[in-house]
Length: 223
Image (tube, rainbow, N blue to C red):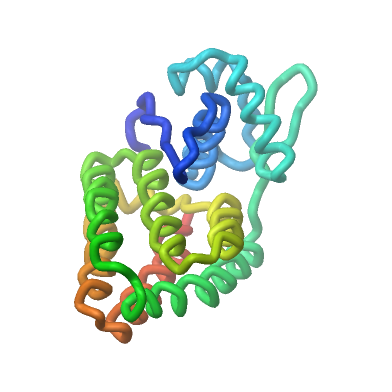
């Protein structure tokens, strides 16, 4: 597994999130990346030390994650990460594909090139995080990139649905890809998506997005 570190807490959307929300986002990223494992019980003080914050916002953030069904509260011990079945992962990925592939492909015709180009630094963050083996930073940047793309379609409800699906997914295979030196190549797909969008090549966008989401369920979700 990649070395433990203090992740940079992400900022999603235009509204500045509270510290509690930023901690929750970092914990979600750790869940998605598989750095917090299903069935394991984690204490708020233990997680606080790992993330370089105090125990109170971690405890509050974990209660938020419990409401979302991502963890269960274990009295006097902490929080147990809930498991996600293979069938659930299949269903999440299927719904994501139904939404994200056509919506992103349509942006090849409708999106402002300046708005698309503004996402390039985020795509580069994904590549940098992959090269460093920083899984939490990878997941955070990946989330910002894809939600940022979908936001250009102008449908906030669609963005919320995909955000929820991504939070519930698990990408346990990311660690293996880092160890094999393959995650950086996958990260480059984000730049490929941008280039196809800027070229107004709708079919190329569709092809890259289909391949990209295929990795989410196969390569990246493996144990």
